Picture 1 (cartoon, rainbow, N blue to C red):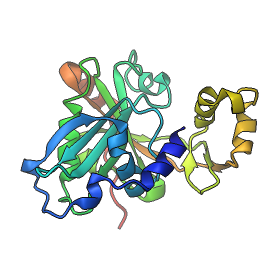
Picture 2: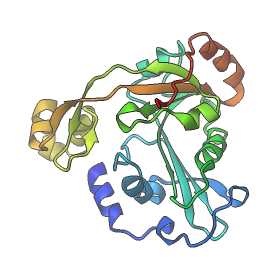
Picture 3: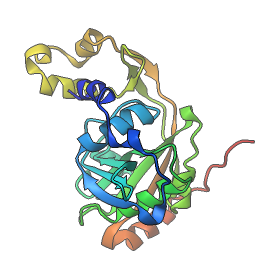
Picture 4: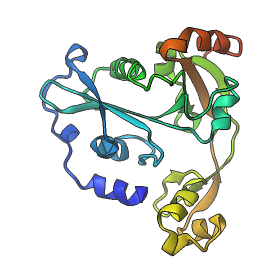
Length: 238
């Protein structure tokens, strides 16, 4: 189960704990990796404290000495309708949501944009759209995505999410993942019963700034379509 993996990862020494050298962008090597290789960095360094269960591609940037300097993860999004609403005809096969970005505290300020740009070129050939969100609840504006020329598509609507027994916010669909992976415990329960059993409490989620960009061989066509619905970038309030 994802939360058990996250909890275990917090107690395992990882390469990013050991960085004792200056991090230089021109010396970073970006590789596709397993989720396990970036999990601790995400659960201890990302504000959410959670590595999403639905991760399709994970990437890591390593220093010349092999230490972890940054991590980026992509997933299928909440559902295919999320992508289709942006670019008709796209789905979780040819689109991705960028679900996590993490950089080592010692990394230069432009590390995230540098590494993200590398990873988008390493996605499967069929991927033509990348969507990502900046959480207004964390006062994020999406400055990194603006620097990468993502198109701004406005704010997502508020919705119901849940807070688990440790205070971490989780999505409602995670209960279904728990039921599928642990049928002997949860198979006979409704999703509502599972959430109650796990001690989850409903909360109203903050709206998020939504960004998207075309990638791969169809990037120009996708970006032209995105230009037709793009809005001015949000600016940080003074």
